[in-house]
Amino acid sequence: MSTEIDDFANSIGRQIHSYSRAGLMTADEWTLISRAYLDHLGTIPLSTPEAEAVLADAAEAAAAAVSFTAYYPHERFHVFLDHVNFGMSYDLAAEADPAPISARRWIDALCLAILTDTFDRHGEAFYFTWEGMPEPDDLATGLLSQVADDDEIELPADTAASPGLQALHALDAGDRPAFDAALAALLHHTVDPLPLLPLALSALAYRAHQWLPSPDNSRLPHALVTNS
Image (tube, rainbow, N blue to C red; front, side):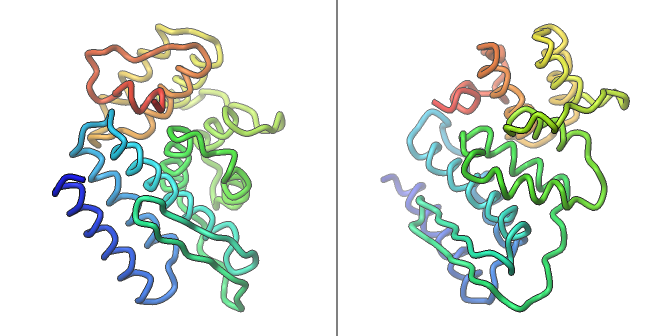
């Protein structure tokens, strides 16, 4: 293991254990952990076992935030991060319900679940938290319609000219030029080095139609899009 990888493993391990000793780890702490993994992922080669492990734990930490919102304190659940060999179990408690997760956090977590093929493991938590959102979110609903085994979740009409919804409609229709145009519009307005929504949409396109992003687009690396 390289010194750089060693340093990150030690750093993220200290961060996680610090959170666990400070009290109840909530959706906020798990979201911060996921973001730390994603920040590191942007600094290493993506076609490596280390990148695969980092992405997997970023997805698990993000899903933990969703699970905390869905289950705590009424249901038991467990979180485990392989990269740092850290697990936490949540038992029943007589505490107030957590605040609903924001649509942005939910969408980021779902995008990571899509990229790592882990939606089936966390699908119930995603569904419960989607139902509990204070305001309906068309993009969240549209993404869920593509991965959930539920015919009653329909792709919302693209009435707001949202590039994300445009991409989903193009994907549904098998319209590659429209999909590419919507993806380009999304990337133009996304400053993150790892644009989770465009990556997840590209992953869905690859699985449905074997469409791959242009090799010139370094922000949509094939290693992440194909999960290989």
